[in-house]
Amino acid sequence: MKRVITYGTFDLLHYGHINLLKRAKQFGDYLIVGLSTDEFNMIKGKKSYFCFEQRKTLLDAIKYVDQVIPENTWDQKIYDIKTHNIDIFVMGDDWKGYFDFLKEYCKVVYLPRTPEISTSKIKLDLKM
Image 1 (cartoon, rainbow, N blue to C red):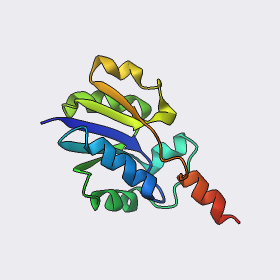
Image 2: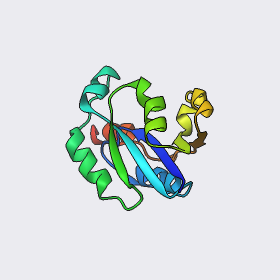
Image 3: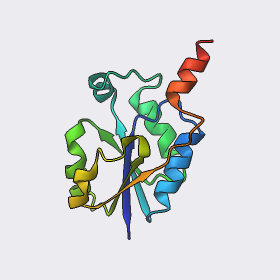
């Protein structure tokens, strides 16, 4: 069984998120999503509209997602890869090159983003 992992905040869930999760799942049999906690988002300078538990509930309902784990720090990725026997790490290509150090532990894939949508764009559009 091939195991895949991706990470994100997944706030204001939209079809770009679904596209990423669907494509990530196509790389393996089991998809784990590392979901940024509210505390970690504060460290990153982000504020989510939905709290961690609400975002987790949404992700748990998506058929491509097999498991959701909390992402508490930038540094936990190697631990998660080892602990969950991950074969493939997947992220959006806006992070291209940033996680190449993980190639020592698993395959690293950067997927193209859905260009016309993002949570930031939704938040900006709603301010109109």
